[in-house]
Amino acid sequence: MTNSPTDAQLTAARNFLHALEADDPRNAVVVSEGIDDSFQHTLSSIAAMVNMRDPRAASQELQKAQSAFLKATTPAATVVVGDITELPFSAMVVPATQTLIGPTSPSISDLAARIHQRAGFGLRLECARLLKESHEHIEVGSAYVTSGFLLPTPWIIHIVTPQLNLAARGESIELLRQCFQNIFATAAGRDWKELTIPSQLTGPLGFPAGMEAQILSEELAAARKTGFSAHVVIVCDSETAAGAYRRTFAPVTD
Image (cartoon, rainbow, N blue to C red; front, side):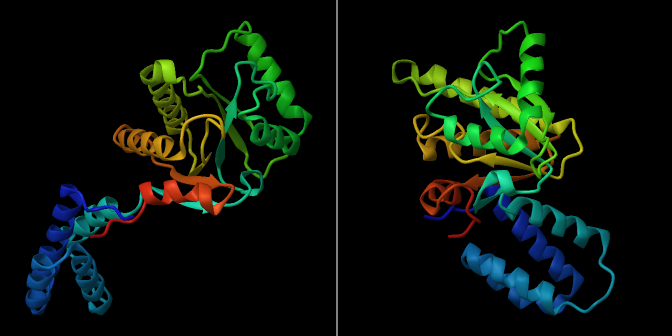
């Protein structure tokens, strides 16, 4: 499954083509073919002209068009398969219960337990302190930041995740949206270059992977407009789990 280009991506690509033509009139034929053909051919035409361009300074107009094109067509997130506890990125997201201090729900116990085990006793003590400061009342959707302690990741965002309640499906979806909104709002105020998020944040008994991936995609796009700039890395524990996320965050094509 592939993603069709959006109007914004088409516009950015065509503007870049025209800027390349203005930069070198010899590109006129290639530009004409790139605009009239498929979007994949447009991308190929752009790549060819950029790679064949003489090594000389680019005008401000060309640089601006290139930046807009790259911003519009670069995938919003990277999807990888691996162990999130072994990745040395700036920060990671950890699913949590309303106690914070340890996994009690079967739906998230495996991942949360591994993270707490790898981080060491310091993480549990810090979570206990946060729970006490919150008067032991933590709402679903709440986000808390702690050190990564013994993990290779220096920072952790603990997010209290909901479960999919089929009897109140709309409310469950809104709670998950709130989780992602709070994750990105929390990260936006920090100097983090990357943010790792586990696939199926709500666990194997939570939301279907495709639904969760779509909600994540929508909230990430909204967060980009309000100051969130860290690169998102979605970490999956298997190729099967990665499938839904790769389809959602696939590069644009025809």
